[in-house]
Amino acid sequence: MILHPLARCSRMGVLLRDRTSIGIGGTAERFYTPESVDEMRQVLKHLRAQGLEPFILGGGCNTLFPDRPFSRPILATEKLRGLSVREPRLYVEAGVRLDTLIRVAIESGLSGLEMFIGIPGTVGGAVTMNAGGGPGGGDEFGTLVRTLYCLHPETSELVSMPGSQIEWGYRSARLDGLVVAAAELELAPGDTPALRQLAREFMHRKAAVQPLTSSSAGCIFKNPPGFTAGKLIDEAGLKGERIGGAVVSTRHGNFIINEGGKASSGDILALIERIRDLVWSKFRVRLDLEIVVAEDRPAVSRGGREAAGAEWERRKDALTTHA
Ligand SMILES: Cc1cc2nc3c(=O)[nH]c(=O)nc-3n(C[C@H](O)[C@H](O)[C@H](O)COP(=O)(O)OP(=O)(O)OC[C@H]3O[C@@H](n4cnc5c(N)ncnc54)[C@H](O)[C@@H]3O)c2cc1C
Image (cartoon, rainbow, N blue to C red; front, side):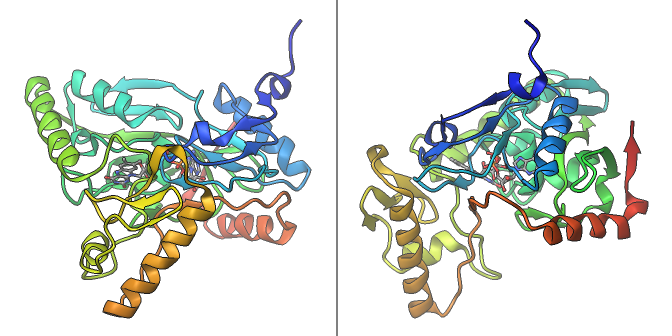
């Protein structure tokens, strides 16, 4: 029997705690795992026809879900794993894991990605979060994006735009509702053994300061201008602070650990508030979230969707539409 793509790639009752690095989240009522960009386009179109805007899930390494059932549909990119080397470029689909991408680049003698070693998650997440600031220093993923392939928020068409046309921010990219399908990355020729060595060194540096083997969502807060969030939290005496199963890492103050898998989403959010309050009262510095707290909203207002579409209508010169 041949199943319709929408039926083939949709499931009910998927446990979100199994899909996030922090190990928290209730059941997703509708969970879609398209196997190709075209299938993802069909899913988006189908949901948008019902006024629904799915939550897009990559590796779940920067995301906190609520513990209760999540009624907003989830579109997971985990099966979009296309990857091809077109020296000195790499074409990679949104669901490819960053560690896989880095390994392929290094083994293909392409440099530019090795400093992102140890950042978990997918290419779609790294683009959306403009990941970086890892052991290799200040480089951000957006600097490598030559072309971004996305699905349009209003029409669900596949569009592309040059990376240089995207407003990249600190741990953000202004995508106005575009869903990342794939990216073409611009890399430079490099020497594989030297790149392997660099990646090993970066990994050692990261593992020395971050709790990489514990369940977390990475850095909770962005670094405020002129400060380091982890240092402020440490100086506020908050390392080891706990609420329920949520504990501030003793290794790095900007990580909250789900100790023994016992923390609820509410424990994490309460600890976040306690940290914010204390850092504010001691240093008068406001901490903004880096992690994404997934909002459960079953239907998107037509106004909101149109606004995203209108923004891209205004910027249509930046987009190329693909059949
Ligand atoms: C131990 C640890 C260490 C970390 N170290 C670092 C670090 O050094 N530097 C750093 O920057 N981050 C770090 N992180 C955070 C995390 O790894 C990055 O933010 C990563 O890029 C998230 O990717 P993801 O696929 O898991 O995204 P997810 O958590 O799945 O999603 C994050 C956001 O991106 C959106 N999104 C995901 N895919 C798409 C898509 N295809 N299209 C549109 N939107 C999409 C989601 O809706 C969500 O809003 C760390 C995390 C952990 C757990």
